[in-house]
Length: 201
Image 1 (spheres, rainbow, N blue to C red):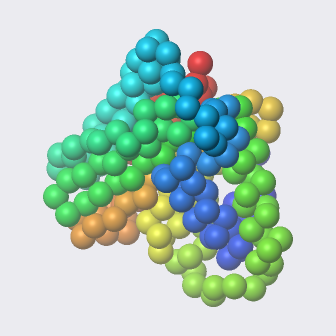
Image 2 (cartoon, one colour):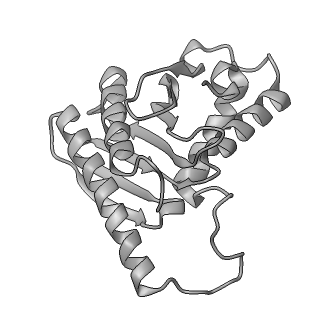
Image 3 (spheres, helix red, strand yellow):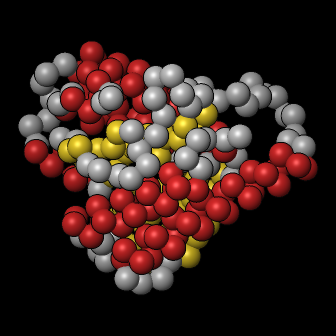
């Protein structure tokens, strides 16, 4: 099943940018975390579990991306929580930003946000083929697209009835031109889905 967002034109681009921004900066809404202003601390067990998941996901993505790139990468975990998992992989003249929030609403958030962008921006917009999302294959995902101009891969393994992970992989740097960037992003996303295919436990 393909999300409505994949079939859109320029409107989906904004949706993807919004989603990527959410995933990389804030983990997007829909998670079951505390309300703004709440200061409840996670239990040591939950914290340890989140750290273990983040290390597994980000470590796997680092290894896969480094292999595709052909040079080593270091990893920095920005947020270990399953609902807002983020990490940054850095190498010589390349940076890979990975967002992998997971939960029961991963597919709904993806579909709702991209559909909203289509409604707001309609059929007009930017006439640039490089900004049009292209459907790509990422093992482990239900749907995945690549935006060449942004060197951004967006994918989810969730469905309308099951939860999962919502993955964004943004690649930048002179060491990863367009074709290489897609290869690196696909490798990182594939490893991410393999690390937590069913979202948080």
